Length: 599
Ligand SMILES: Cc1cc2nc3c(=O)[nH]c(=O)nc-3n(C[C@H](O)[C@H](O)[C@H](O)COP(=O)(O)OP(=O)(O)OC[C@H]3O[C@@H](n4cnc5c(N)ncnc54)[C@H](O)[C@@H]3O)c2cc1C
Ligand SMILES: Cc1cc2nc3c(=O)[nH]c(=O)nc-3n(C[C@H](O)[C@H](O)[C@H](O)COP(=O)(O)O)c2cc1C
Image (cartoon, rainbow, N blue to C red; front, side):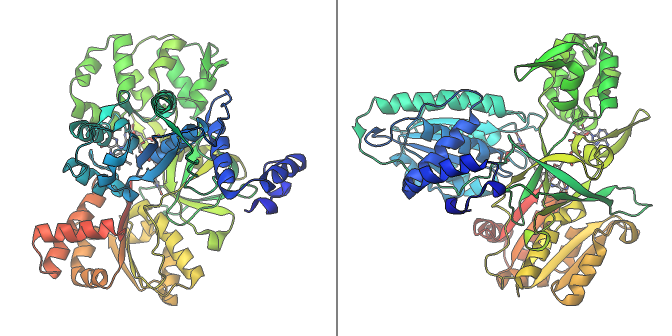
């Protein structure tokens, strides 16, 4: 929206605020407007304190700061953007880059570099940063004696290779002679507070270092990103849940839901490929059971974000109870002196397996112990929102957003359990009630800009979600490129998600080809990778004529098997060695023609 078109009805500001903002904006140049937007964003990211407005002209030091992020699902990008805004607000000349857009050989020209990198796969760099990682590892940066750097690694301590990409970057930069400005941060799933304090320290150190150099008359480098929405992960939009519909059959052993949520009244927009972040609260019964099991009085007061609330409220709204995690096992083992948990902590693989199968209450049930409210609170990590691939296009559904959610549902020792967010959406949120949401952009999963380009979509299970969005978008755009869908699930009659819509698209010609793998409808299991292999010649022919290939869904098995199958079919039908086939697929990935949204 242009500032001159800003109206109180279309923004969260009142008439008077709109008037003032329009007046100020009218006096500013494009560069000044960009700087001001960064400044305000910086303020919005600070908790309570105001940010000093640094003078702009003639106050820039000679050196500059470069921030590079490597992000698969947007967390590292968000941290890097906040760091960028804080640096701008501190008067530092700073540029923000996606690792995909940054040439490793330019590192030697830098003075100060901060990297924020998540880890994907099993200790691997996010897709966008694979090239950057490879070149840095191979020493292509040369000597970096004049570079000062800092690294934040984002990860999940339940993985074997915790924050590996951040650790790699730290090692490679240090090997090349660069000097650490401050110690690397390895941040776990609830990374906000740690990243915030690391960023403050890093910005202060960079500012101090640059101030020692000669000031110049350099201008402020404007923000590289477009105007941010008012609503984001930290400030979610309170949306209305319109529809909760089960889309698997009565006899299916899976509960998959189609949700429709209204974004009306927000300024949120999204593109096919983006995800929706959902904040949720925990099941009250689960909270009560945990309090009873640990002997904690529900009315005990604890402090959360500088506010005193009961431990019961804290557990419902602020702490992670439906996942198992290593830091809880560690604290709980120490507090209750449970020898079997202590033994588990010595074996990382066994611990990971245990956490994947036990929620917090299960751990407490299996190892009885009495805690105080403070001990329980201190051993839990903060609740984090869950992401869902968006299953709709705004070209078709306008201010709605649709999701396809597989409900995590299982029995533990005779008690029914659900996943935190999927249970909340499905069982505890009535249609018409409110849900806190935000958009997580994903530029690593985009339709080709050329509407004539053919696409191959591989999305078994809930991996189908973004492809529904892709087809709605291509339909609305009248895109002429061929579309081929690979879908799979256990049974045709029970689990064919959005069956009627796909049949309609086949009939209209929008969907040129559909290949289905219903794994349990015959004796031997058939999965999408088998269908892909069967159709190998044609898949390769599509790739040769420029097709983009997309994979969405299960990261543990499916995405790996599909990747291997692609290499095999490229080798076979392209007459290539295994190595050449891998290079072919790597080249597709670098050209953004092989994109994955896996979880
Ligand atoms: C980019 C991205 C896109 C995604 N898109 C989608 C999507 O489109 N659709 C979709 O459905 N999901 C999607 N997901 C996954 C989604 O974000 C959640 O991880 C998923 O819904 C589970 O979250 P939950 O809060 O319901 O469960 P959680 O609260 O995370 O519960 C999971 C936990 O339950 C326990 N557990 C699970 N099963 C068992 C069992 N059988 N026995 C014992 N314990 C068990 C384990 O401790 C496990 O850690 C996506 C994820 C990402 C990162
Ligand atoms: C498919 C997948 C694989 C992951 N692999 C690892 C891993 O090997 N090590 C790790 O520390 N974290 C791992 N993580 C956790 C992410 O690094 C963590 O969620 C991070 O906050 C994501 O940041 P991003 O949104 O910037 O990509 C993985 C997450 C996913 C979804």
